[in-house]
Image 1: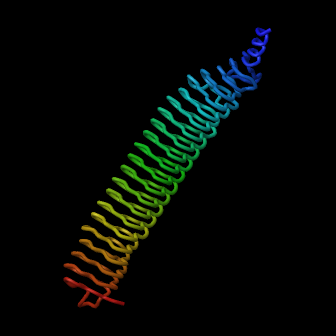
Image 2: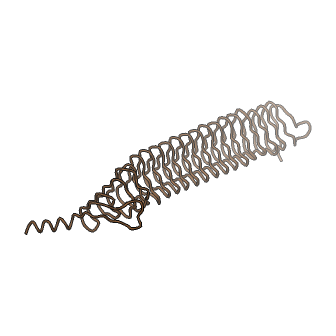
Image 3: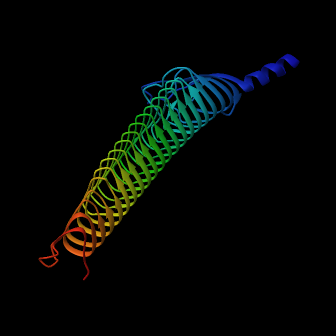
Length: 344
């Protein structure tokens, strides 16, 4: 009797079966399952399971809740959702939620959320959210958000938000926002906002805002604002605002406003604020103070220019230098040594 009861219990909890789908052309669902009603321990390619699941290569998954351990790359059909812990050579599913670790890769078709780690790459056709590390790269066709570290590159076709780090490059087709570090470069098709550090260059198709540092250049198609440090140059098709420092040049197609410290040249439509340069101020309008070897103002100066050579078309202020030229002064005071002035 006891033996019969034992056999009955064993049969109830241990089943050997094959879950087949007539329309499956890629793989079957053979599994040795210890448990009942899709709960327990599953050895094989069970498509629905709750608990612990061990399989060689996942294919045509539906839903797995718990621990999913795979030993080889996924099959040709990546599908389903894994909620919990996914570990293997290359865990893959439509959606990965929880903790995912892939020795070579972690791959999601419709997004992954949680702690996502891989020795080589973390890749998603949709979003990646959470704590994300790819030994070589993080790559998403959607957004990447959270703590995002790509050993060489972090690349998003959507937004890149959070703590974003890559030894070579951070690249986004949309905005980059947060604490952002690209060892060589950061490139954004939209705004770049936050603490932005690019080893060689920061490049944005729109605005750069915040604290922005680069060993070579800050380049924007729109405005640059904040604390802006470009080792060689700061260049904007829009305006530049804030504390701006560069060894060679600060160049804007519109206005530069704030405190400028530049090694060679400041070039803008209008400069407003304090400009300090051992080189050249080259602007249409000056509003404020410029200290440079050569101050060239093509239209109007409202304020003070200090240099060796100071030239302005319309002076409303003071020039101090070796040669001072104010073309709107009377004939005897157009060119004066040491000091020149004119007030409207």
